[in-house]
Length: 504
Image (cartoon, rainbow, N blue to C red; front, side):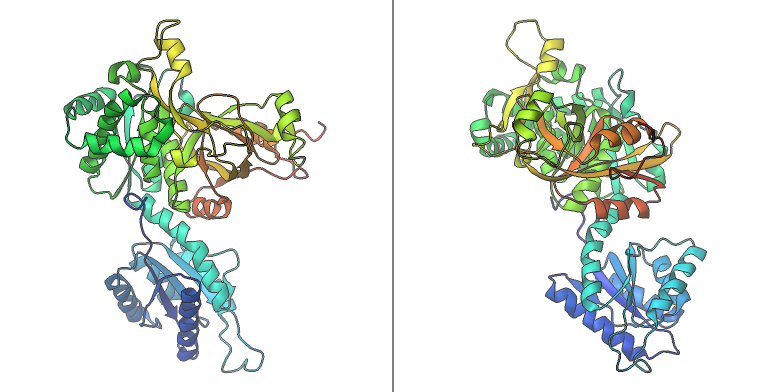
């Protein structure tokens, strides 16, 4: 994961309004640093306290010299609204603004900081300068409170840093009739993300050039170790290892000015016949390393996956919001154990075989399908002779998803290039799917209404990114920081969507 996801190096700068006691802000800053240490959060204490614009320059320079790529601007007292907001202007990275709560009722004269008031001026001044600072939901607190806010801020900062240095590399064009993966690239530029679009032929030429590469043998061994008993087609591994090298070399050679890379690749119908395999397993392996490879040239799917990888610092996947759960399966396998869910709260998330091996079930006693290399049933039906043994349609990684909490989400541009997003927290149930591909039974409260009044109504595509944790809070904050005006979520049963019929 470390190779393609940024590390956050935090610094904290205390600010002080000149008519307040400077030592109060500095003492409170030191208390926050100590609280961070107790919480296991590494943070550099910037010794320059900002009272004026020259202090701002000195503090930012000190932060840069310490290698900081994200800052916490701490109002230990009221704070100087111009110098403190200029920190964000002069620092090339995310900045969080927080304020100290009053500590005691025994000294509200010389010991009162009024940072509660100062945050209002800080926010107003940021707005005047059109600067984007991250302000938590309730940004005023004790040292321990601030340390918790900083902990919540780290995945937000990590994602913003990653996106600022991200390039999406595509090999396309999209398959016919996949307008659902429509991706006007203006939205990427609005976010500061770079894109490089290539042909499938470019990829094929590069793949052939990697034939016989001396590194292939080591990758094959790594695949064998990962798959274990799931290595059902050992003759395929050399071809897939060659493809993995092709992608990783391309990423390294085409980063250009950027540090981080993800892919959005065309994977059918021409790919398997020309390359000799399905790319799904290779895609899954790169996702494990923080380099998502979105299926079907889904550019905004790749972007969403990368956001999820930055937030969780873990592997993610991209799945179709694919099929409903049969009523008899729900009644037999789900309703007795999970009475909190309705049938319409459940669905199956599926893709051909792109989910990382580490996110597939190891549950041998709950009737769930374990991970193994397989062939793509749909493509075999489409591309190979009827009744034949699968050949070039092999290469998917199949298994039921590991049960547990998930967040289903997507950042997407509309055809008229407006960015919108959705977030829905839920879980993968420990129930066997009895189906094929990388697949799981998802349960999300009020999914039926969300499906109709968000996914359909807002015309989202069928692909969604899956993070294997509940990270809705961080995602919401990130989308807000990115300036996404429409952020949809699954509303509770007693809250109607604007388009929902109240007489239903």
